[in-house]
Amino acid sequence: MTSLNRPARLNRTLLAAFGVLLLGSGSFALAGHFGQLTFLDSGATLIPTTADPPTWALWVTAAAAVAVGLLIMCWLVAQLSRRPKTHTWHLEQNPEQGRTELAAKTATAPFLGEITTYPGVHSARATLAGTRQSPALAMVISTEQGGDLTTINHHLTTQGLPRLRQALDLDTLPVTVEYRFTTHTGTRAR
Image (cartoon, rainbow, N blue to C red; front, side):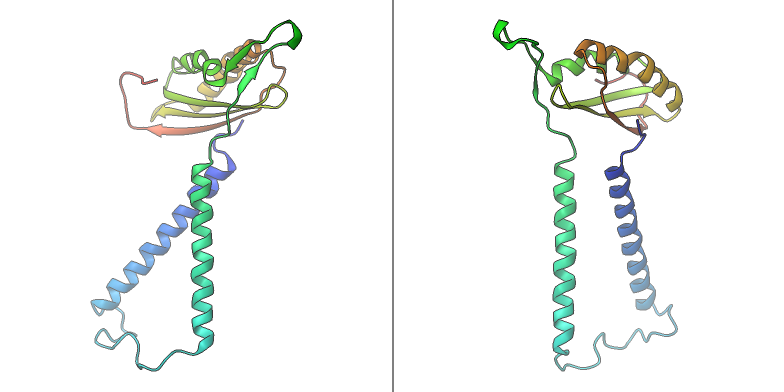
């Protein structure tokens, strides 16, 4: 179990780097405009000549724009596909004798109800994905600012997850957990 999965860490790192880049370039532009940078003339034109730039500069600019556009598209697609795909689980051992189907959301509802009773947990979401042969559980737990993650993790690994595995009749259930802190206090939302 991890407190923050790898794509979420990468996503937050890239957003932070992009924010710092924008903040720095904006600060540089403002300082140049107001004459705070001694090596720049605030009254000078941006481009000293009206001649066309060299052809290679246009190609480099176009290539850079395409690369940035593709990176943005990849990031947007990653935002849309963050949750694993859920399935209806088939629990029968012998299909000739009958069929039992269970929606993944129905299987996780009592589990999530239990997690929200843990001290410090404000709300929880879970996605049970994969098949019975290769299941996966992705969770997002919102905790209060003073929530003890060690205690929540202990309750989760010793109480909640073993019960869920037993209810689904699974030997193993790979889990990823993302903790989010919330400023909300008071009644818990499910």
